[in-house]
Length: 152
Image (cartoon, rainbow, N blue to C red; front, side):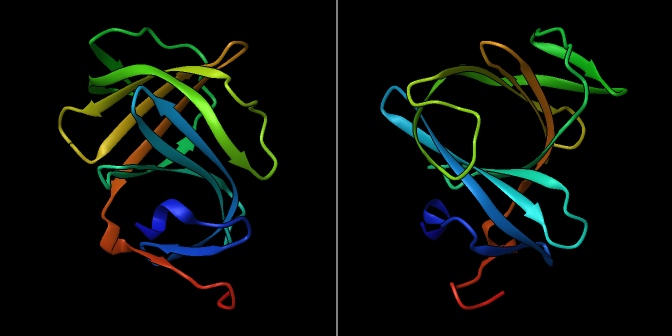
């Protein structure tokens, strides 16, 4: 899957919006792994995260300002109901680009799905010194175009 091998400064188009890849972090858990890319929207310079799982599930996330959340099976967040779908502990296995993680650093993660709109995902990552809360949506691989090195 080409989406697992994006390079720093490569450009991709997600649902007609162009992004530049800033960094990549590979997380492992048991015998599986997933990739998280930090990407910048080329139109408004906003930062997003693109999570890619081996199962071909791709989620585009935006980190929110909120830092506190009650971790339960069912939560109410910004007026919408979410249900816990998976949780675990990921370990940083590899990375490139400017990032604030270190090799072997661990993160506890919790992924919730919106009960009404199954494409909406709420992610909570608990690092040793901070909590990141992100809101995202599942993206179909057919809505992602990977540009080659010479396309900008």
